[in-house]
Image (cartoon, rainbow, N blue to C red; front, top):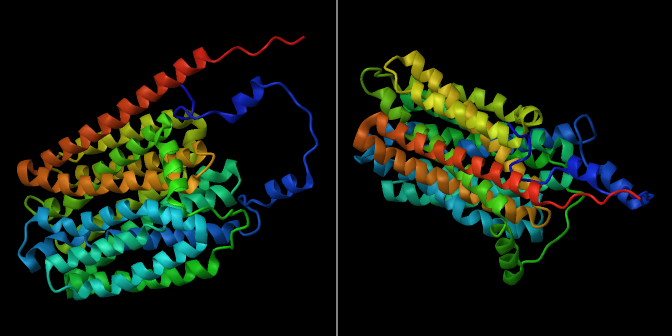
Length: 439
């Protein structure tokens, strides 16, 4: 299995084949290289914990209604597919606004935009419990998702600028791990709270937790030292976006992120309905507790860097795809234990694949990193919206087997794109000119 990075240039290999040029680094260059954060260095732990908390707040708010959909359906008298719009609207709002928000981060700074985004999102989160109708709830969730759009792309751009390259996958993996903890804790908390006091109190509780995360994030995150203010001119932004979309490797990574998230969004949008029905008939609190499997995602995301170091980025994507496939097939079983094992594998495969794909975007884009990350996040959350809606429609039409079929189709897309990238990388390496002979 090749160990190249999904077609991305491998720095070490390039250095080995290039002519050797001896130069004395300037004091400025040395200071810049040394001042970027690395594990064990000044500020790294604070930065990691701050972005971890931002990830917790983002996923807890974004998916705060997902585990509560059966209760939302009952309260408003709507179907599963209609209730699923409370999830799709939030992820869709994020997908639509992540690119404009990334442009604002180029102008006003990553930390400033992330702080403002969290402030608006938690404010809306405190209004969500008072939604008088399903339509009002969907609108509030869309606004909340749009506000959260300032987090993902700005966070990955911040890390790409402030963290040394060798530590980038690990740092992004910790942010993604925060996503998994937020998704898990939000669903578990809402499940048990809703069982006693209803879904409105449950989402209000998540809003209050997110307020605490937002305050701690702003207090802990170090001020950026390597941020270079960019332009807000539409023409400059359009050119940057066009250049990224013209890069075949970036487009493949965007598609991989979207397809992985289709699986994850579809599975977790309707799993509550399946577990609440016969033969399992679990109460709401236990349905919410199922999301403890997100802890597996925390581990797989934070260890994605080591996996990529052993297997290469493409090899890691193959493993992530195979793990997700095995989980989908296991989840078809009639045994609760096997269903839970299937969810563990789906979660592990998704978070590992997401961490590798998102870090590959930051590795590949040499300019306009915020826009490159924003395009990834946009594709990723479009995949989430599509997965939430299609998963619910498939469940309505064919039961859990229909949702699994949709997921398997998406994983097939991931594997096909990765195989195409492997072939493209081999073709490019064969066409590359041989190094000039030494004289």
